[in-house]
Image (cartoon, rainbow, N blue to C red):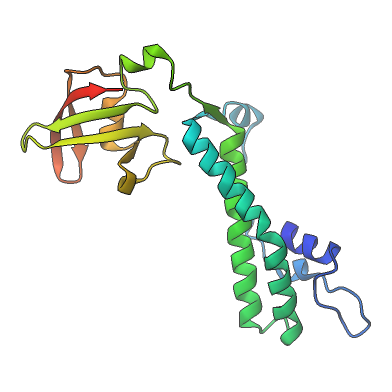
Length: 200
């Protein structure tokens, strides 16, 4: 957040004091300090994140969109800060919060992309077992209903598009399995047995 507000000041978009000087809004931000320390080894061993090509593209587009909002948010902060005392200004607080949310999401996406590996979905060996990016058709043994899912990383998961995370109860037990196998998923409604009908 302070980084963003410094950006606002450097661009000359922040409020001015009675002498016409830019007010440094970063001084009004309280930063919660943390005592948690990461060792150099822990940082180096940060887990690689596998992404489908589609998921990687979606994150890139979202990142570009968020970065394009920075100037607009800077102007919003400038307008709000010009209204009255910056210490008692609800619109200013709202603009700061939105800027903070955007900056936080930008950092999150950049971190994900920095550790991402785009999987090759055209690899012929991928069609033999369930892996990230695999489209898998399963049957609920008890109800005999069939479902088709794409197994993706947590950052790409979207139940409305039938994209399930590899960390979800079903996604975890499907990984590494082949067509014909039965798996038991520990779901909120209890253990559910599925049979893998096909994978592609």
